[in-house]
Length: 391
Ligand SMILES: Cc1cc2nc3c(=O)[nH]c(=O)nc-3n(C[C@H](O)[C@H](O)[C@H](O)COP(=O)(O)OP(=O)(O)OC[C@H]3O[C@@H](n4cnc5c(N)ncnc54)[C@H](O)[C@@H]3O)c2cc1C
Image (cartoon, rainbow, N blue to C red; front, side):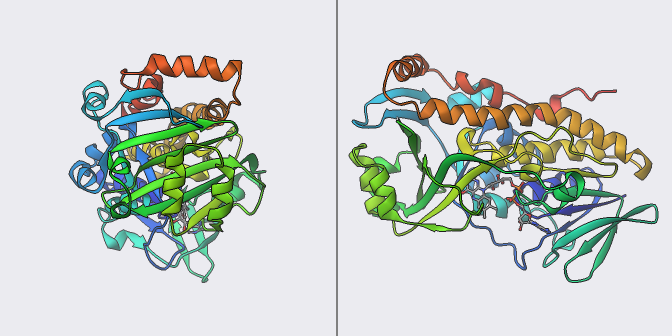
């Protein structure tokens, strides 16, 4: 059995590790010519940290990440606390795994460092997949062809594999854009350095500040914007961003005043796909279920996919692959679709204009105070490997 993974992002690398640890031969084909990631802070919630621990990455994750102690919701204009949820050790006690924030590049590195280099091929941009004898031929832009019994498309939101399997689909613009910034922690006042996640919610927008590893403060601001090219790497205007938060809590402006540059990207997602797999080819991570960032589950869901695909393909012969991939898809599609759609509605809750609905929301937030993440129990308590395999 040879498995080809197209794309060496967090999802692809984690799938490679999961398969190798179960004795399945795998090669990752990544279009970039070096393994260097960009991006900003990600949250690693217990449903994902539990898996990374099982993969033997618990200690390195703990060293590279910040264990978040509290989740604080603030009112937009005066910064009044709306809710204060306890995380830290109580999350570990409740869910059996921790809640972290980490820089995307650090998470990618700690996973890819665990995949032996001979299983990773760089500078390999997949352009199409074709039948090749009893197996599949993966064709690359440089003319190379690789043979495999299984192809996993982990090639992100612009997935070539998804396009080949299911045709061109229509990205759905959310109406919002995300601005992301990183600020050296030493540049900022003490209040920013508490290992907490802070969320200011207000009319049409919200602003989140966290840590992205020990040295950087990370923020993401979600505001109404215009549809533009779907890209993670466009620079945005700091003054425009400050203008959008005119009249909001001064602490937001303190952060913006200490920021050198912001990245800005329009937020798109797709409707859940009714089918991921065709024969010996399937999808994983953002290629399968691109989602808005409002539930902070992009990386976590790719990690869940990766853990399960390793379990489903372990010990399988090439003839048994379609059945194994159908099981993988069946177990993953409902949960990821629920999260894709849930992320859409979470944005609406945060962005309520002041009024009756907003007061109801704030009252519900009050009830969360002191509790430990019960609102997110459905996300955090889930253990993908505990799912019974359908017959
Ligand atoms: C540049 C970037 C920055 C991001 N920053 C953040 C962030 O700050 N915070 C956050 O929460 N989420 C961020 N994300 C999203 C988050 O990382 C993903 O939602 C999550 O990790 C799932 O990843 P994935 O492996 O499925 O896809 P991706 O992370 O998109 O990885 C896909 C990989 O496939 C490779 N690839 C694509 N096409 C081909 C091809 N044809 N042939 C071979 N290889 C190919 C890409 O180069 C990439 O390495 C970012 C994603 C990107 C791409």
